[in-house]
Length: 332
Figure (cartoon, rainbow, N blue to C red):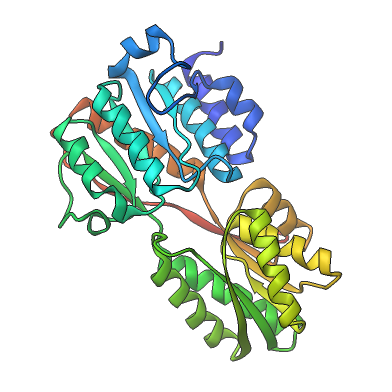
C-alpha cells in the first residue's frame, strides 16, 4: 500500500481521468447492503465512528459509479471506511436505506446526492436528532430548512449558469453548422429533479438569444441510456427534420447518439452536462459539440473534507458549497 499522501494524490488523479480500476485499487471500502447486513464484517460494524455513508443517485449512472469509487479511495486516505448505497434512482429506497444505517448507529456521517430532495425532509431531521452530520445536494430550502444549521451542509450546482452554458453552446453550434436555423429536440429532467426549473429555463433563454432561428419541436424526459435512446428514437419518427439535441445529461446525450445512429440520421449539434469518459471522448471525436462538465473530483474532495470537519465538530454550522463545472469542446 502506498503512503497516505501518495494514495490521496493517486485517487484524485484517477478520478479526474475517470479510471474506475485505479480508484478501486486505492480504496478500502466496497458497496454494501444498506443495513450493513450479510455483506458486512463484524469489524466494520464495530467501527461506526469511522464510517461514512455515500448515497449517490444510482450506480447505473457511470459518473455516479466513478464518483463512488473516488469517495471510497479519498475517504480511506482520510482514515474512514466508506459504505456505498445504491438507491437506483428510487427516492423511497434512498430514504429508507439511509434512515436504516443512520438509526443503526453505524454512520459517523453521510453524503447523499438526493434523487428527490423534497423526500428527504424527515431524514434530515432524523440525522440531526441522531447527531449524524450529513451533506446534501441543493440548498437548505430544498429540505424545508430556512438556512444553514449545525451538522448539515449542502453542495449545489449553479443551475442557471449551467443551463445558460448549455443553451449558448447549442445555439453557437446551430449558428456555425446549420446556418442559424434548426429543429431541436429538448431532453428534459424528470419531475422533482433538483434545479430542473432554473436549468431548463436558462437553457431555453440562452438558446433563443444565441440562435433565434432554432425551434424546439419535441421534448422527451431523460432516463437511463437505453430508455433515452428509445424515447428519442420515437420522437425522431414524428420529427424527421431534427438535427440538434439538448441532451440534458450523459445518459440522455449518449442515448441521443444511439438513437440517431440507429435511425441512420446525422446529429449535427448536441450539448449536455455531466462529462463522463465516454462523453468526453465523443466531444473529442466531434460527435458532441460541448459538455458542461461537472468537476466531480474537485467536488468530491471539498464535500468529503466538509463532512469530516462536521464529524469532528458536530456543533459546527454547515456550509454551502458549489460544484465546479467547465465547458469542454473539441480541442479544449
